[in-house]
Amino acid sequence: MNIQWYPGHMTKAKRAMKEDLKLIDLVIELVDARVPLSSRNPDIDDLGAGKARIVLLNKADLADEALNRRWAQWFTERGLHVVKIDARNKGTLKQIQAVVQEACKEKIERDRKRGILNRPIRAMVVGIPNVGKSTFINSFAGKACAKTGNKPGVTKGNQWIRLNKTLELLDTPGILWPKFEDQQVGLKLALIGSINDEILNRDELALELVSFLNRRYPGVLAERYQLENAGDCDTTQVLEQVARQRSCLAKGGELDLPKAARLLLDDFRSGRLGRITLEEPETAKDKGEKDQDG
Ligand code: G4P
Image 1 (cartoon, rainbow, N blue to C red):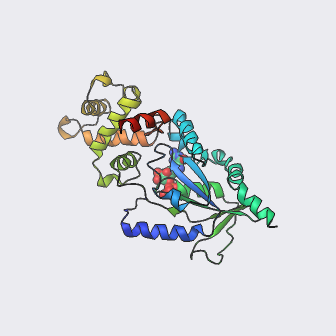
Image 2: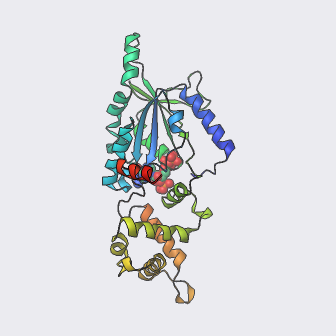
Image 3: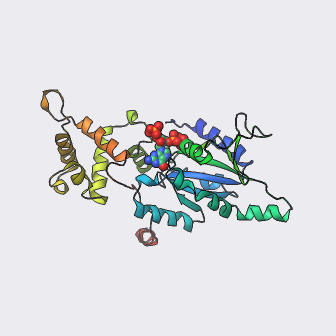
């Protein structure tokens, strides 16, 4: 789903989320493991203040495993609980129950002291469009659980899905906007296919991808498309080579670069180029250097 965000949409989304937050104990935030920062909502820390928080690094199956580990550590260092998942694969969701208990330890203890026993934790899934919220809710909740019906105060249409005795999930996820005013964020979301390709220049996007891969994952393109001397070519020449190797030809036999661009982007998005992450966590060292640079 692609949503064009306008200030009106953002105000509405924020208001709806604030209402829903009154009803819940735990915010389950989904981010895309290929772009863990760019796929976050800029206001999520404010919105989620005072709630238990879990970050799910979703689509971890498509992301670089070494960077998945570094990102998991990065979020952990910021006091958030983290689980790497592939929302389509139930096996990867098993650890979440234990992490929920851990993240909500204080609430459970508070309840216990007040004599409230066995009140289920209420959670809500939030994230930007296309990050995998619906897929996650479907896999996590599964068929077995029954909806518990409307409760007072719940926005009309919202229902609680009872997962087990200790956890209830709001059936509608909170859709939040990304930090799209940042050009780099927009570029990365476009690369992973979260922004409608129709409104972008796909050829330029593919050239950006070539340039990134040559820097960070050298050899990946040469191997996938059997390119020669790809490291010595500029980005357009690389795309031309891809077009030649994959017989992307227009009428008259000339190279069809838009077709090659589409093919390259599809291969990247579906993981056929391998597991690739587009952004790295800033290390303490990077930060120190930046601060020194002013
Ligand atoms: P949303 O509710 O947050 O908007 O996202 P949604 O669940 O609709 O997921 C968006 C796309 O991402 C879907 O693909 C979905 O299958 C895919 N997806 C979700 N989680 C994962 C994951 O962990 N790994 C991978 N590889 N893909 C994931 P689609 O192409 O839009 O739909 P479909 O072809 O699966 O039907």
